[in-house]
Length: 200
Image (cartoon, rainbow, N blue to C red; front, side, top):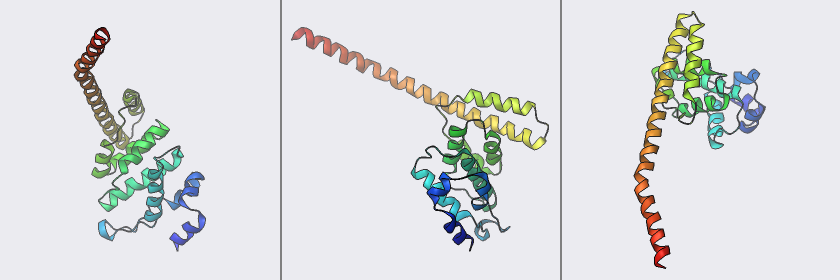
């Protein structure tokens, strides 16, 4: 019945286009209280339909609230299902890319819910983003909070973004190495071109 109600509301494309937070009930984690194979999430099929549609359009120009609410639901699902959607990292990555620091807390809390969400969040690719801005932001938020659970979340967040920083540095090193490797070939081509001009 619930699936039929969602179908009657709108298709995936229209749902995404018109999404607002008061529609979160259609994609939120609706759990039967059981785990693993016995677990049922009434919104799972529709939520995954939405995510797959987003993937088909490369997450182009998507409502930030929708990305946040999908990430929260998928992280809660992963915690109780003892497994995770295989492209969770892309959902997390696009939340940061499209909303910046706006939903940073939701990004970090979702990452902290389980080992699976943590590992998938580590796989996020932000090599072209200014990681230092996020590390500073997390430090600042940590300094202003007294809740022990959020302090732990921010500490974990610092580690996550430091890992992004390390990947970024490694990527830059590879680019520099590639440039240095190609320099002799470039010089050879220039000399060959000059020689050709003078010979002719």
